[in-house]
Image 1 (cartoon, helix red, strand yellow):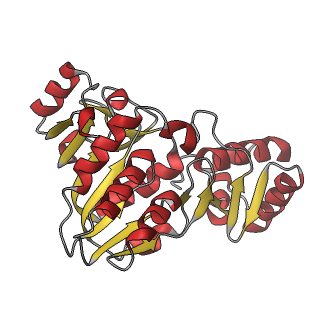
Image 2: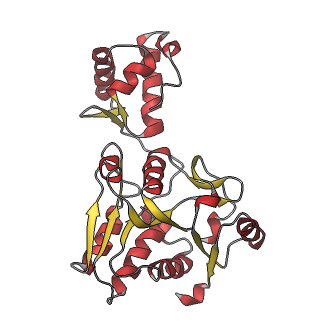
Image 3: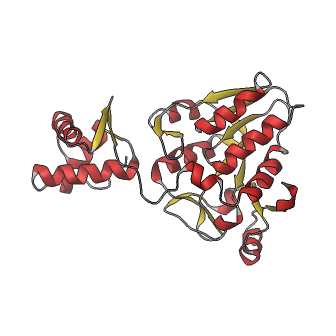
Length: 273
């Protein structure tokens, strides 16, 4: 975590400091002791003491090297709830994404309902051979299990986020820094010509950014409700997207503007589902 708040955050009472510390942990879902020490200008011993107090209050879970919050963000819908929204469109988008994959490819498949549908579509392509998929989505991994041994699945490590069944830092980067894959199949919460590709929460956004750096080709999957939306965490400009696959419900004017910015857009009819 960048030390954008130098020593000024060390002022105030211990109670105030712990409240600010808790806010920082909830913002990122995982914060290391060393980062909190730098941010608040206090020793790591004091940080651990503060975290122990927050854990005793039931505000955080202490894990090796840092802490994670007990509470989850309020602006996310559970995976199972999101799965039913634009369901036919997501299936059509997923099939279009799976059709891009060739024998011998290496993939990164992101967490999300549409990317999990893409995993199911990959399983249905029984002719595929020697495909390796890295993923931070437990649902995605379980969907792909049926394709073994044609598809080899590698799960990125990290801290479990129950709402999305996803794994986030601090472990995912250890693998992502060591690989370069052919294609990233990326989920998101918004795609906008000016705002770029965005996501609703910061912890998953950090993993998605590392995925972007590890892929030669970026394929973004977004149902029509996400086209023209801008959410909290910026992932990349639309110019960095090689292909955006969306559905017929997407705003035609926004799609036209995306294409003007050299973002290739494939619109898949829901009837294809």
